[in-house]
Length: 561
Ligand code: NOJ
Image (cartoon, rainbow, N blue to C red; front, side):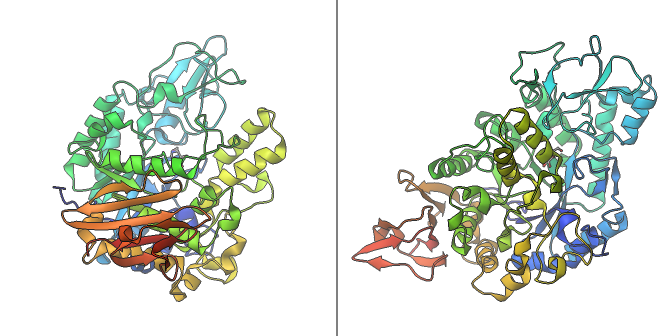
């Protein structure tokens, strides 16, 4: 029997604060803007908000480079604004989750500044400072965002510091006990301030297997991918256990880790005594990215592979724990563009509703990224200069360096750019989509006159209402228990392009079914008897004793009749 927990019953709405709602007319979203929109989030059916980093930051990676863990960025308001948001949200039954970025800080963080100012200070050991050989970095690791992962320390000969992400994001040394205690103190402090949990960033990177000297290069830049040496390294579980013991375990909070965990290790991560409540699985979200992580190289994924990725994640996780389910976040392009990149003509309300149906029936805590519920799409910007995201520029430069032609690189990189999901939320058809009265920090998608929340709310047939209906099935009434606590049982898995599963609990059974292709397919109607709970078409077509699934039709059926 499943253990009941509030965080299993949660529905998370992810807010990218820069892009959600500007309340003070400076073109940048802010915390008071989120407070203004709480009713919108509640009406949709969500009861938790994950706010991407809102801390003080110089914005090298748009907030994932934190220069003060205890302070809200001036761009977003004040700590008091955050406390007010937490209180107002609580009144409405909504919990607030923060992003916890503890693999690295900003180079402008006080600890790093002190480490730079005085090589003898204790803060040196909070990070990785290492000597190079003859002016060359200590080893040839490539950072995730391209180039060496070692940056020369200004004014010190032959000295480097490690940064797995941008040069402005030095990695923290988790072997340093005092540094860890500082992080633990900070985490507990935020919980005392009323935060209900955390999404935990890049946590699989905290243990390093240091390399003295170069490894065999894997690219023409002479470097080697860093992940083999810093992701899920031997010893990491001791660190995670200690982290949990000193922080999360002391409170009734939700923890969602950004952690691609091998199936055979999941028990330690998300089992009953796991380090976290749940992890994000990357198999489906990154299906269009080659293993090397290079956005400028196309992949030939199939719908069957996508189905298998999604359902394998479901069946692996349910053996021992819980997952967070999602299609979009601030690191992804919009899901409708990703999953229909080769058949753009099929992008429509029907296909958007189909994706929603597949996602919202899964076992796990759903995470909806702002704008996904109104079917927001990728943006097409004219040139690389218009993109803000650091990863987009790095991928573009790497693509050019690999001698591909400019157009191919630009097309693929702009399609995959993280800015696609970071464009301002489209609230209405007024100037700047109701996001701000000033020119927004990133352009609004020109389709805002058609795709916007106000229009979606007014149209009872919209994708927004489709989301709302699917979420309400899960939130209250007859199906709540089976849709939250039931197991996922794959269905029709031997049929090409059919994505289907049942949620099963005791004698209750609910079928989620999608015909993920632009053609009809015939089925025996006896496999579909029951009450129709959701449909992205007006009807179910039964002809000559067959159920004819329409192109991209997605339905939900209560099979218990
Ligand atoms: C994962 C975050 O989601 C991403 O936006 C960020 O660039 C990296 N971690 C580094 O913090």
